[in-house]
Every structure is written in C-alpha cells, then in structure tokens.
Length: 487
Ligand code: CAP
Ligand code: MG
Ligand code: MG
Image (cartoon, rainbow, N blue to C red):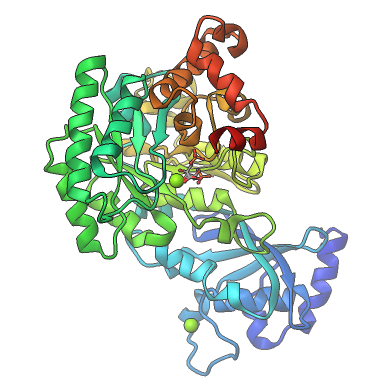
C-alpha cells in the first residue's frame, strides 16, 4: 500500500488535466521488464503547478507531448508516452519510465539526451530538474556500442598491472611550440611515466601546428622507449571544428608511424559532442577513446539545480563507447566535486554490475534466468573465460581518468577513496610544478606509487627517494606559499 507521501501524491491525480493524466501511471508495475529506460530526477515544480502536474508536463515534453493535447495523437503514439511512475514528496524525487523504442535505433546517445535532458531543462514548469541516475534495460544495452579498446588493452600494451596507469597533462596548458611540447613529453616518459595527454584545448594553434606536434611527439616517444625499455602512450586531442577535420587528425596520427596501442584519441565530449564520441568509437574500435569532460560543470555541479550528475554523464560515456572518462578526484584535487558522487561514477563505469545512486545497473547481457551462465560466473567454473570474455556477455568497462589538481602526495589518498587502482591518473601541475622539473615530477609520482604498492608511508619512503621528498615538501605547503614560490 502507499506510504503517507504517496497518498498525498495520489490526491493530486484528480488535479491532472486529460493531457497530463496520459503521462502518469503511479500503478506501473515491473518497471524493469525491459520496455523502459528508467530515470530519477531531483524535481521541484514551478509555474504554480503541483509536483504531479509539473512531472506530467516534463514527461510529456520529454517523450511524445507538448503543452496541449493534440488531435493528431494515435493509440500507438500514446503507447510511446513517458510515464511518471513514482514521486517522493519529501525528497523532491520523480521517477519517469521512457519506452525505449522512442529512441533512435542502433544506439544514439545524443538522441536520448535530447529527450530526457533536452527542452525540459528550459521549461518554466520546473524550478529544479536534475537527472540523478538512470537504468538501461538489457535489450537497450544491446543497441549501444560500449567501449571496444579498454584500459585492460592499454595495460597489456604497457605491461602495467595492479597499479594505476601514471600519466600527465603537458603544462603550461598552451603556448609551447611543438618541439618544446615534445621535450616535456620526453622528460615525463624517461622519468618513468606511462601516459601523456594533450590538454583539452590543444588543437592546431599556429605556434604548435598539429602535424609538427605529432612528428615531435613520435620522436620523443621513440627516444624514451629506447632509453627506458618501456612502452609509452600519448593521448592526442582530436576534437575539431568538424568531423572531417577530426578524422583527418586521427589519420595523421595513425599514419605517423605510431604502433597500435601507443596512441589514444582524446575528445572533448561535451563541447565537441556525442556524435564525435560515437564517431570515434565506431571508426576506431582499436583505439583508446579518451573522453575529456570540459564544461561538464554546467550540468553536474551540485549547486546547479538543472542538469545531470557525474554518474549520469559517465554512464552515457560508457554507453557511447568511451574507453575512459574523467570522473573527478572525489574532492581531493582542485575541482569542485562530491566524494560520493565521483566514487559512485567511477565504480559505475568500471564494473559489470554497480550500484548507482538509485539503480543497480548490470551491464551484462546475461539474462537473469540463464542459470547455467550465472552458475559459471558465480562458481567461475569457466576459469575467468566468462568474466574476461565480454565480447558476448556484457558491455566492456570504461575506466575513470583522474586528474584535476592531483599530485604525488595525493595519490594514495585518492586510491584509498576510490578503493582500487584500476584508473589512469593524469597530473599536470602535480608533475610540472615539481621544483626540480618534469623528470623529477614523474619520478616522484612513480615513487609515490611504489610506496603505495609496498605499503610504506610516503614520508618514510621519501627518505631514500629525493624527488618524492621534494614533492612532499613542495605540494604539502599551502597553496599561497606555493604561488609565492612559483612567482
Ligand atoms: C588538470 C587539467 C584537467 C582538469 C580536468 C586542467 O590539470 O588538465 O583538464 O583537471 O578536470 O586542465 O586543469 P592539473 P577533471 O593536473 O594541473 O590540475 O579531470 O575533473 O575533468
Ligand atoms: Mg520540440
Ligand atoms: Mg586540462
């Protein structure tokens, strides 16, 4: 039976006009029967409406309706109505079920977002509308690519296991010539780092022409690989003004002599758009697709009443086929971020089954009723074949890429917060602000990681590792002290 709050909501049923009533079904049962994409919003009504009237208006506009009931409706079009199926008056939460046949077939993330966080974010019927979590039915997962080349493939290429992949972003963020840029890459790689990325605005600036940047990075990588005997990876920002230019940049990289696995394609997924993300995934299934989320704050910051959460963004990145996406530093780095939010997002995209804020999402296509397979999975009778062979059974993992404001001193606190090492970390200032320069910054990062793996406190470990000792001294100071030093 209904609780106190649901009863109040039921009281509102009779306030609905015929159009609104067609988008509400508080008796909808078995919502996870595979027909619906399920969404839950933080929701505050506006324009003088009660929460059920406003929720019905949002469900209408984000599925088949508009502000009036139209004469052109058909019985089938009504079957495609999104349905408000649950409301929590106390927590201001509204659950909406979207018949997933509404969405463009063969997997189109841009199309889904245009519905569920499209016009509705601008409607006056709400004064707060934030998509907190969502649940994809198995049959819908079948329609979406999901990641192809994953962090597991990158680990195999780098021969790096059981620790984070240690990366950097070249700083200054902009202004180095292509040769200077490559020098910094070289210093980081010979200092022991695995992975270098372009910063998110890197493109074809006149002082660092794209073709020359590729050429110099290749030379730097070859030199560093030869000197260290270790493979390296560079993530090139291929975001561009148009798809043709993006593809041209990808092809320039692929024709520059890099061996497969040694390069990734970085895409500014919010500003370049979901079509760019999915184009890269579909064109280059053999490349790590690196989703940078610059501008996500407009949708995800906790103080913003409109938008969606980091978890929602990350789930869509996995659906679209990103190999990795920045998921934040759980409040440990420089960016505004909620610890629980960032960690839930990181877990939500790494695991086959993960608990979100409201939904437990299984990314496997193993039907619950398939007892044989489930027995194999649970008993691991197949000796990991099932758990690793995602090709047939589930959507591959998308890895957290952890960046903003981290430095070697913060590596262990972050690992402890996220509860694992299956991520790529990219530290910019955390490496290049090191008093002894980039090479030392890389060494400090490697030493901080070695200390973690050895279970030794970094201060103790730094007694015999000078670069780490310098990093601890420098990065443990308060920010203003650091700025004085740098000035
Ligand atoms: C980090 C960074 C990253 C942001 C991304 C920057 O530099 O390169 O793009 O941190 O944030 O441009 O600020 P630092 P997030 O390492 O010097 O901070 O990973 O949260 O999306
Ligand atoms: Mg419209
Ligand atoms: Mg950056």
